[in-house]
Amino acid sequence: MVDRRDFLKASLVAAAGLAASRVTEARAEDFPAGLIYTGAAPGRWAGKEGIHVPEVKIEGNRVTITTDHPMSEPHYIVRHTLVAADGTVLGDKTFVPTDKKPISVYELAEGQKPRYATSFCNRHDFWVTVI
Image (cartoon, rainbow, N blue to C red; front, side):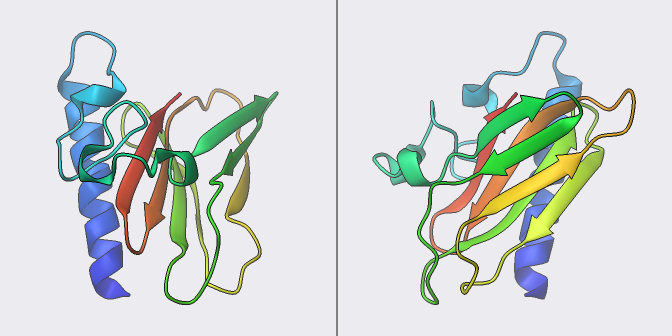
């Protein structure tokens, strides 16, 4: 589990650093190929976007992240993370294979604005949705 956490932290730092270094607005396809995958840039996982790209629903100060992915011992979504443009983690949730669905809900404080939602699959790597 430590290796996964280190990978997630490094991926998140890379995504935040990339976003912060851009003068223009970050686009999903701007993330490093082979490290971060998106619906627009699925890389070697082309065809698997439908069950890996995190879906985001915002209602007031409540943000819901859903990944339409089956959960089983050999193959599951490990984690969701909600991140601001500056790399601040606004919320995260770790899943276990016995969870029914990978859904996470976050209540944001006044002034918090999410920019990225992430989903990490134990087989198909790290996926990001730009909000």
